[in-house]
Length: 240
Image (cartoon, rainbow, N blue to C red):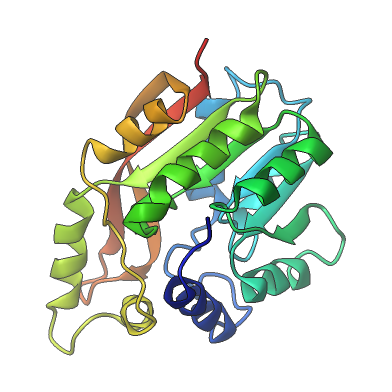
């Protein structure tokens, strides 16, 4: 299986038009708001001597932090332009980065063969994936975990749509960073409330812990309020 050409081009176009400035992508929050608290939820269940793979790593902001908590950190993304950003932002080679299509089962299995069982960090990937590709994304998590790995997955809930709509209806239209998302044809918060846990279970994953959260963005409303998107998080392992 492969993602559609439209979806691939949308992400390539977005990252090609994005500068290297931290936070220019609306979801490029500082690790202190993302990977730091997420790691605290994952690490009680995970073997930190295993590598961690950051799925949908973008420019690698979170991956570089994860490299300080796990023996090895590998960021993968569909977009070649995103991986180029990530490598430029990491001149010391703290983490590793590679292009990967998560719905390409052969490519995902090849990565697992190279790394062995890994931990997985995935923040807000399924919700914006094409509906027909979402089962394969969940399956990629299971493949990479193997028997020993653990995953942290956070996905936007449908409540995020209301927040995004509110942000879009302010005078003057959507803030610049949000407008860029829409202009490139990206579609956030597309998954239903129960779709994500159902996909994870169908992929052979079991939920060790879960809860509600919000994913802070790097954009603000005219009154100065930061855009925080409602989400749900899961710590996962292979089902016995």
